[in-house]
Image (cartoon, rainbow, N blue to C red):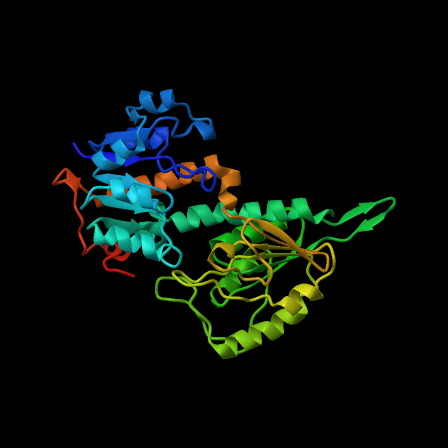
Length: 366
């Protein structure tokens, strides 16, 4: 019986967990033993007893769990100390960004550890139940709007009162992927006037279906990969996009930045001059800050104020929705493990002819 193990993340940075009591039971149904660190989910209000009642084994030592587990489920990359405990030829599954985790991932590869990063999932129908980017970005887009509205200090919807009419807030979303579309939907529900832009022309229909106005770059080609992700724009597109945004940015009260390119630094879209053109009291929330940021002046974990404009970027916005995010993330991992599991062999089978397995396995040093 193979062991699936998971240890606590560094709670100062990450509050999500990879295994919930619900997924313990379903993993045990696949004939796995589940090893967890004591107080694994206590910070989320999940008592050890809930895990024990579903059949998990709890240990005080993270080292012991990592040394014994054939499969390790994580949210973020292991620390250097954790890497030293993980045994060779084991399997590590999580949400690992190749851009920011290159050195650690190379250390793991050199230990013959098979690393699966769900950030690399192909955008195919069969992969949707495992799509961590979608499940987590959906929540991030929602939360970014909520936090921006909390900092804005004004009402969002139009209100007509005996004392006068309150005009609705104008909200611009940059990047209309999963996070961006949820940000649009949330902003519309709150009564804002919403516009959005994206390098993928297919996004126009999606934005408009949610009630947003799509800002398109004149003569732009569709900058979308075969896998459905955005790809890096050329210099001509960047110039035209900047011209479009110079006029749009200063008219908006709140800007939500969500533009990312998998495995690369986030594109810089909002310049210093654009920030300074906005009205004092305006908000920029940069969800791409962890990969360098879409906006000038954005710093992870800080609120910078420039000419009265607040530029925000959280180290991990999902820490503010950690229980909900964990429930979705754990199900994504469960579905991925289920796809690795061979019913015929009654064991894990790494079938590289399976597109999902092939695309998510990091096969060589970065």
